[in-house]
Amino acid sequence: MLENKLNIENPSELAKMEELISKKKAVEMFETGYLDNLSGTCETLFKIHKYLFEDIYEFAGKLRTVNIAKGNFRFAPLMYLKASLNNIEKMPQSTFDEIIEKYVEMNIAHPFREGNGRSMRIWLDNILKTELSLVIDWSKVDKEDYLRAMERSPVRDIEIKHFLRQALTDRITDRNLYVEGIDTSYYYEGYQSFETSKL
Image (cartoon, rainbow, N blue to C red):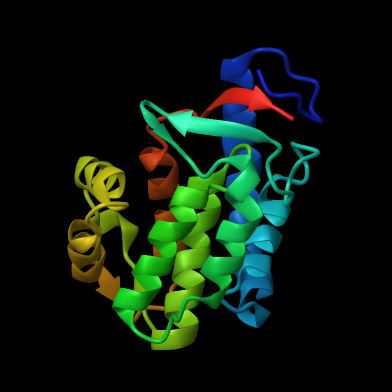
């Protein structure tokens, strides 16, 4: 159970409130134009995470202080996390392939204690919009295909590139598309990270 500003002690209730609040904040980011002035840097991802979760968690927008894993896959260990983010920052992002490669590396880093997937998908769309004037229509990306492709992406990223390329659209100012993407994003959260150690 994660400590939270809402003082909720029931995991199910916390999950519901987290979804409700962060979805509202995600839409707010779009409507206020908050994302328009952000570029595809690591700092931007941290700003997105803070905006989404600052009303829920003290760690919003802050680097995680625990090692986390999904199933048998362990995300970047704490001792290498800052170096990993420095390397990701230097990665090029001028083509679709380069942007997805950067996205895959950020997923391996998983810089936050919670809320990585949701923050990173908004971040990915922001980079695509800035660099290519395109975004992902997440409603066209099958959940199971996406999750399997992301699991395999550290070794082979051709699948995730294929699925996301098929869902590209130039509807970059379409509020309905953005909102549908936020809803779909929560549908993708088919797992919970778990703590494996503390500093």
